[in-house]
Picture 1: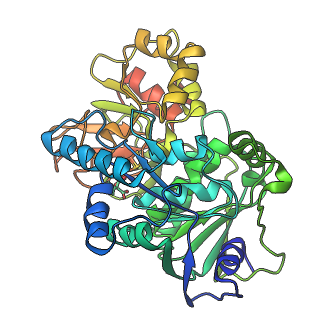
Picture 2: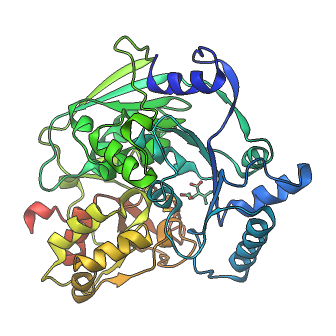
Amino acid sequence: MNITEKILSAKAKKEVTPGEIIEIPVDLAMSHDGTSPPAIKTFEKVATKVWDNEKIAIVFDHNVPANTIGSAEFQKVCRDFIKKQKITKNYIHGDGICHQVLPEKGLVEPGKVIVGADSHTCTYGAYGAFSTGMGATDLAMVYATGKTWFMVPEAIKMEVSGELNSYTAPKDIILKIIGEVGIAGATYKTAEFCGETIEKMGVEGRATICNMAIEMGAKNGIMEPNKEVIQYVSQRTGKKESELNIVKSDEDAQYSEEMHFDITDMEPQIACPNDVDNVKDISKVEGTAVDQCLIGSCTNGRLSDLKDAYEILKDNEINNDTRLLILPASAEIYKQAIHEGYIDAFIDAGAIICNPGCGPCLGGHMGVLSEGETCLSTTNRNFKGRMGDPKSSVYLANSKVVAASAIEGVITNPKDL
Ligand SMILES: CC(C)[C@H](C(=O)O)[C@@H](O)C(=O)O
Ligand code: SF4
């Protein structure tokens, strides 16, 4: 069996096979300020008390602080629910983006089953958990019962070999993979990432890769925990390695497909408008003018992303014809970035620092684009109108490329600075 089948078998208390429908208990259910209100509304039609007030996490990140009367009302609904149901795991004061806050707070562990009313819940596969997004009404049933159903996914083994260079990052690996697999190429499948490049990769790069598994339709993205993951989770949960449920795939595990990606000499990758699989080598789009540059999100708002940007932006200034928005993915990362001097350098370079949260990523909060404008962003989606006007466009890249492009005002390979 592969990791996903093993985790699901343990929960189902029997050996599961792909295609089979199972009903299993979950370890954690997450929702945010955008999806909790519809979940609460449905929940209140079917139940009065949640199944476990300590296994639900509510995070405010999508529209925080509230920017419209509607989002203010949504947040009120959440606060009332948190009080009434005594939800202990609530992070509603600008703590950051749910997919960064949950691991930081020690709520994510290998072998766990985690569901969330957000499509990028697949991020926690980076820590060896089975995690997936679901609709708010499905999550309402989890609030009520602590259980949900799944069809056991088939798995695609995605083996990565080769080394990143100074201008590329884990983001380029996942963009390259999505470019080859396509936006629907892994629909309802597990994307199991492995190989020497993944084995050596730190927690943050792993999170970037698993985060984008949904962009090729995958049910979940997952990786075998390595030393860095075990260390991170132990530190965050206070558990020893021996107390963690580290699940690995068998040598003869079954996959519906096996793919190999060699990243040797890979150029920075750019996902061009309006689909995440419209991926090109940077040399094909260099010179494209950018009105806005954005570094942040649950994909690339972590300390390593900010460090990469800092190395390029320090003692430099952004181009007058562009603007640069930087959003640390969590308050903790924000504090570390201040401590390291990154934030000072960003402000000196002319960047706008926004509070941790989703911000412009889905065009709902701040940093929206007007008609005809272009944004180069470290986020995960470039759909039509994603960041504002339907006639605006979004290109996706790693944070080194975004920082270099902010200096030049056009899409720039950091190698050419
Ligand atoms: C608002 C929310 C439901 C949505 C998601 O599920 O992914 C958002 O986070 C996004 O990135 O588009
Ligand atoms: S940062 Fe973007 S992709 Fe991530 S949860 Fe927020 S809106 Fe969704």
